[in-house]
Length: 265
Image (cartoon, rainbow, N blue to C red; front, side, top):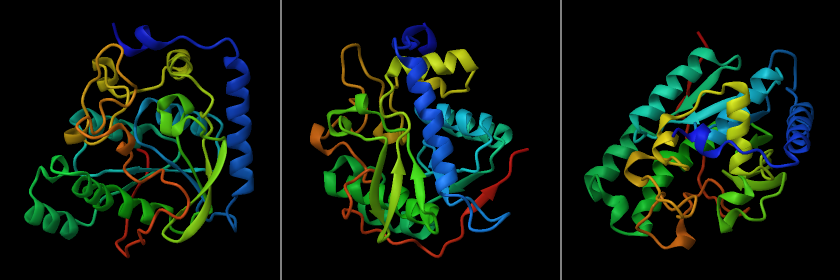
């Protein structure tokens, strides 16, 4: 049974939720329109290539919204995730930007702490996340007024109060943070994927509901928490990488390293 067959169960009020999501995306694009004709969007989607974000990519493209899309390619993603990234770059109406870690920072970290440092303690795991995700995120959001995520309240206890519109500070800049799927259930996400033929990561068919870097992600068993497969060796309260910390918690500053911009084929 694949992920669609297993999960596609829309909630009774899904039509209203979908309308709310579309309206929020349209308003977000309008409120954060480019400063000048032809300029880059002032709002962007952080696409993890998970099911939720693939839904948001489909909505942004189908609604033809002036919203950017970026992916953090950490250098530790599964082969299935990288293959999906290639397909996304080839098919997305909106150009997809790919941000990677500073190579020398990765080399020095691995040389100093080892290739499996993330398993040693939480501090080292978060240092790895900082190099591979947080620093590139700072560059991805540089110059942006707002960003969009696929956070949902159902994903974990730490996200149970995620609002449709929030604010956070990354790189010392406070931005609006839109969470258009915050009210959606997992069944809603997969119902949309099924209805619209949205491409998705085949790891979802192998019981990976939440997919991150390969060393830090495993499949979950029946009855386990949605994010049980992320950093499974750590305490439940620590299961975030820093991308969605509270305002003021981020101290990462953007690097001058230039990102790679990729146009759809």
